[in-house]
Length: 487
Image 1 (cartoon, one colour):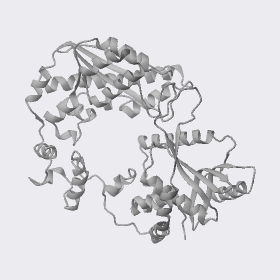
Image 2 (tube, helix red, strand yellow; image 1 turned 45 degrees about the vertical axis):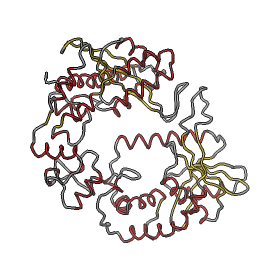
Image 3 (cartoon, helix red, strand yellow; image 1 turned 60 degrees about the horizontal axis):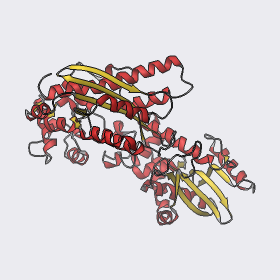
Image 4 (cartoon, helix red, strand yellow; image 1 turned 180 degrees about the vertical axis):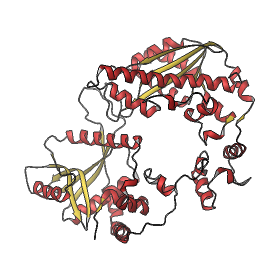
């Protein structure tokens, strides 16, 4: 066999044979998005924390010299003083795996596969089954194989103490149900990479499950400004339309779509003119003044940094508020904490002072802001009444916009990033510098609270964060004015 097969590539084959082919022969086509890189970085951070629970464990090095990694693994396995090995490397039938944590016991190996997720997924069982198949094929016995994942009920209560942050679930029974199929998977995967002919597989649901494929743009290049994939909630509809030879929303026949919202997108895209229903104005005029337009920025660390925090809990570190006391009479205030300390208490107390006790509080996607407010009420029960008052005053611009407005250039999305340039072309998030979206805000915040960040760089980051969040709330002002016909 000309090429070996890693566990990750075998799992790629399980998702799509074409993905395996492209990973093997055309890796230059891979584009890692910032969001994907964050997932990788979080996985590395969680893996390193798992290793810290076994201070006598030995790490297998040779990341790129795998024959040496296998040799070092065998040396450590024969050393009775070594009980735990990190990244133990095995090969069987030209398939190679690296085990996150391997513990030697009298009854065989205990393997721990470490994931940054909070539950077991189907792909995790296949992952562990491949590991077990290789390790046992290499002549060893697996006593148990566990998925070690984040326990999202863990609360960080003592500095440096992460006891309980991981849950350990045995997958041995599920693994042995799958193991008999692995020989077949391996044979089929090798037939793909040894044949060297690109599989003829059309885009479909496999492109996004269990992971978003990095080759989507190659397999399904965009050939129109209005591809059928832009239909809202239309993944399956788009696949069906593609199978019918329809790739452009404007080519969809009348009465083909059953969803009223998808039909509206089709109709408006063909006309080229936006639609705004008069009822939007009536809804907006009910709100009166004062109005408080607010937006939050948050960070969710897999590994909590501050006392009282759970894994992946959204930490609110910034808010922006445009206050409108009468039509277009605006003031702006903001909060941003880049000290590196838990910003939560100062966040909610300054927000309560800013929005007072009366007046509509406008947001874009209330589920997000309301969820954060409820979490803050749980953490600071002395403020629960005032926070409840804020929640009771929240008005969500997103469903109003979605119900009454659509523009062809929104391309199936009512995200504020799509709505704003359609309604108000002179305003655009692309005019901002480094921070142009929520992911960029999180990156800037992480850099800002890093003690190694210079004072000069800190000021640049703060400026960029403030300008981004300020645009979010000013965008809501302009959207509100547009909906009520006063822009």
